Image 1: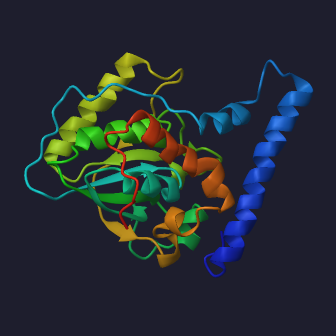
Image 2: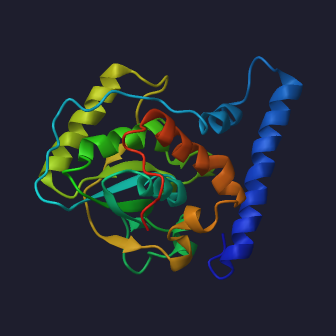
Length: 245
């Protein structure tokens, strides 16, 4: 997307994404219906959920407010899911991993920085734990087996990562990734990393609450709304109808 013309760029990106998905589907159908392409299978996977067990290691945190950061591909969908999760106070799209100077969508999306697209989640630990947030994240938001990619998006800035903001979260994150790796819930190995917290930089205003403001936008409908639907279906006790903003 072009940061100078976000609406036009977003529409263009949506058409491009649709073309790629449709192209992958038609190519698979014409060549071998029994052997779909990797891209097509990943496209279809965006509508599915992999329900995994809860973490064995308790991630209890004290107080009424805690902060966690998640990198799971395009931040629109990550933000959208957490905004519909009970106990979440706010979810803000932004950048993490690079410098303040390079924290702009134009540079990040061009792959010119060390940033990942992330979402900073503020939550009430008495309502939802960090462990529960991780379970939601890996069940309905991100595919932890995709390296530097999620859904139709490619690039290091679309990597999946957990960014703990305290020692309790760090211990829980290490234990959960180890637990999931041994459980073999995915066909491919887990490549999600735990990244040390550096600094969070909020994304541009037009990215914030994007799903709420653009519910009919093509990318949202194809890739992100299914994630929220899976949250509602598989985690009904943690789903909230009205999203936070």
